[in-house]
Length: 310
Image 1 (cartoon, rainbow, N blue to C red):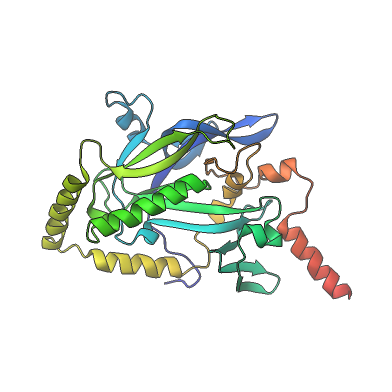
Image 2: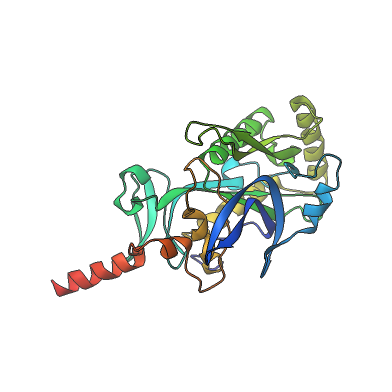
């Protein structure tokens, strides 16, 4: 295994609750009131929809896709949903610092370092909203590829808090059969004083429509028994996934460099969930287009020059 490379679940596509539009020469995230399932490929018009996107919409009452039947891959909640405070370089879009409120992994002029993480409110590098909670949820849709997944990315407190609670609760009440539960991603809306009474949308995780929790647990036990009979080792799968995530400092790679566009939306409330998207290679982030502030890379470069002059 290559050291320093995070081994993450195979990705078949993306789940988003918005899109990106170009306005006055700038690419801006636009919120939506429904899910969109896409492939990992883009055209000039944007992300190419996955066939499941249209298939799920053909069901009666699903003209707007607000629920998706899913399963998670692992019994351990933190393997399905990884959430950290994240700081991305404003120009390159590459991850610079990831922390959990206690410690962080940060790229400095001296290389990768483990440092205290005071959370965004107490970190000078996080000034101006540069650092936000960043969640990545992997789920399986359909039975075509049981180890393949679709990824939902969010910087929304509401989605991260809700998904984290649901995963932990379902693991507990099912007797550690989280990966066998028939679940459903559901889009919910609410209004707050910060949203000026306009609805904001977040993602919830429930048992599938038409099932009670007791019925879902019964189905999970049946699936778990079938898997064990067939030789499926869920415990070993969780262990392999945990090892793979720990193998790298950052989950994102150079191919995901455009994720900074998610972190610097224009005129969006901090409670809103914002579409995670990817810029084409070489294009500047929204933040660099709208701000004259130096990037983190420039700050570090200037610091090195300053210390050398001294």
